[in-house]
Image (cartoon, rainbow, N blue to C red; front, top):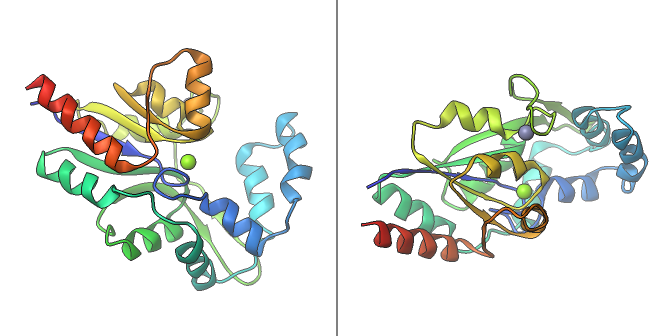
Length: 219
Ligand SMILES: [Mg+2]
Ligand SMILES: [Zn+2]
């Protein structure tokens, strides 16, 4: 049997709502992104600089941020069962996020999934403003020009088949590397436009059932 590396995005994929968006809306300067975005689009600032500018206005302690996320983010159904099934079958399940470890770890702990491997950036929250700490993603990606998830994925693949589960712009390059892609929302529209095949999903029950059926067919 072929083993899988199941790579799963966090915000909007594991969670129902994007935690970065929740945090900025609640504790940052609302509408600030609208003034930053034109400069991002014109290339005046990088995505990392734009995000740092936005998060600098986020004034909240880690406890306040975590309380908000646990209250508002919501988990997409079936994740615990998918993780349990993956482990029983000898597959690996890793979370690849462009978000922040403090937030992701607290949420996963809360949902009883604190032992999942997580690859992400970090944010240092305080009442005086938030500082982002970017993980090292090597050279800029040749596909998207950014330091995207491709580098992290490459570093963790051990010759398994790659399954990618995601919803957003930051998932595009990871999805491009995968043997099977589960996509929803922006990523699904993006792949449709590009004529790239994917399996649509709205929860992890569907993902597990699809993978189980595909494994049964291959056996
Ligand atoms: Mg996402
Ligand atoms: Zn890329």
